[in-house]
Image (tube, rainbow, N blue to C red; front, side, top):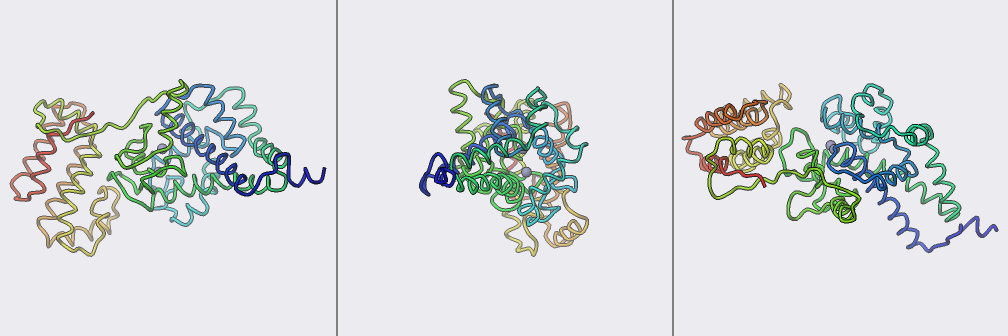
Length: 383
Ligand SMILES: [Zn+2]
Ligand SMILES: [Zn+2]
């Protein structure tokens, strides 16, 4: 009897305990990325009720997080990214606080009724949500605690503790902190989001956070041929057995051989690929010119969207650019292009006309990289 209490019903060796813990924590991560994030929050995929009920149950059992809280806080993050209203921006709170106290920031925002009401549309409101997942939201992790002890005895308590820490460490601290601080950027998005690793396994593909901020409603997070998103692999597997449907993926801009001549096509292609276009300009026109100058200023500031700069930063850039007419021209054109691509001009003719004016302004400066870009600008096509 005492033996069963210490070792539980299923005594395992160390490796087996480790594998079990990895599997159950991974299921939690998959539930977060597929159900909470790509499914409910961004409507990038449709999940069959059988699977979504499993995910909801599993999240209740292993995290005690409510769908409406998670979804609302995350939607607010996208809407207010890197401002003082962003619930967990390292640019506002500092990287250490977001990584080490990410769960506290989550809990603080969870108690903000206005946030939850405003951003939690389309979250489940059925009987089980109200009575169990909300009404008894801590019962799940208590049951898990008891179950772990029955199965594994005292080791079960350690496994349970790891399960409880996994989401705050990897999801809250990892994605919200590191995913806005360390790594590479494929897209010049209006935030600090980064791809922490080209291989997204540990946090279910959420490692590719810059790609996600570039195309928030896309189901697939890997956008370069060398990137891997395990969440997308699960979507394909569940899709093959009818448990999941993809609603949206990121538009893939390609540079075709011939230039577009149809103005409607130009407008459509460029508006669909505006992030790729602005990133193209930043990397292939602005960066080489910046590298020639040996500025005492980070490239990130120059590449950042102008509205994200403080007055002090703006003044600093302007002072430095006074002595470099080429870089100054390229910089001003970048900000103008950004404005055009993000303006809400309803008619495509109007958009194309503004863009033509911009192209005419950009021509004749004798900057090869800029001339090459102007050719590419009319060759974008979305597949
Ligand atoms: Zn983010
Ligand atoms: Zn998101």
